[in-house]
Length: 396
Image 1 (tube, rainbow, N blue to C red):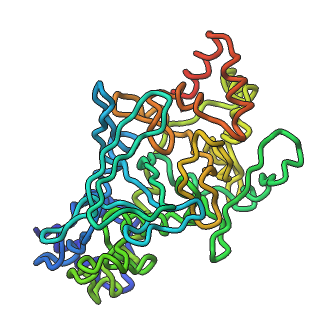
Image 2 (cartoon, rainbow, N blue to C red; image 1 turned 30 degrees about the vertical axis):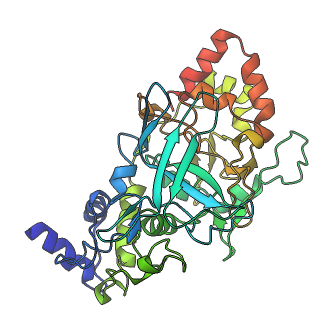
Image 3 (cartoon, one colour; image 1 turned 180 degrees about the vertical axis):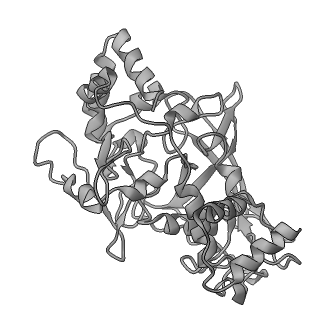
């Protein structure tokens, strides 16, 4: 109890500065916390929902890689922690009733948005069956399963020099290699780099949006105390919230967001293979490195090992779930960083944005669009070279 009270006291003390170690320890405490519905007798502990996916960050991001855990029965029915369903049309417009994402859980006394069931078959998209509680989805709304991405090494994304991202853009394919990568320019003019579709420019923004969308908690960067509830969900909008003047007038303060981001920023990924690794040469020759760039220039000098260009690429119809975002087509995805693949071994690991792939091999074979040439090269490898390449990826 004393520890919790000390945490609360520090969080509400204006201008209080923390040493890095304490900052990350407090960020971990917030990341691990299971939030409760408002009103609660415990300051800095309430604000959950009213509708939500999970009660805390750690539930979706767990294990060595801090990623989703997914298991499937023999008939393909999925049990998951860290698998959510985004809603929208090809232009990125949210559903008028259910918003940007299905929240299948709710605080006591409130009905959730419905039940969601997932099934998976090798080589096919993750299938979603949604039983809505408040009427049908809009005709144009599509359902897009999204895995909670691994967080180990996420701090490297913020180290990349923005100019290096922009320098790699080639929306007109000037070099004729069939790759049209482009940076995502957000509404405020910043360059997105976090998330499946590069929807956030900073880790703070990514954390704040996740708190709002997945847990239903507001912050100064995402001031929505009812979470993802829409105007049509009147009971949700009328439910109590946990806003408090001690937390910048929201349910979590800007400092709390920064503490969580500081904790995530310190999560380590394995050391990447050296540049003279012969299997890296195979990775490059196959064409994978055209988008999964092994390293990028770092702000202030040096390089960052990331295995991504942080650009958007059209991945073709097979990976198009129909759910776009403003300014981003439903078939476009930010190149996923491949760091921390070595930490994701196990039976509960799935790959790609919707978790359809049970192995790295299956994930590569599902690539299309701008990655078609690299996929064809991969398929043409000898069995020995293919195993070398997969072994290399398993070491990242």
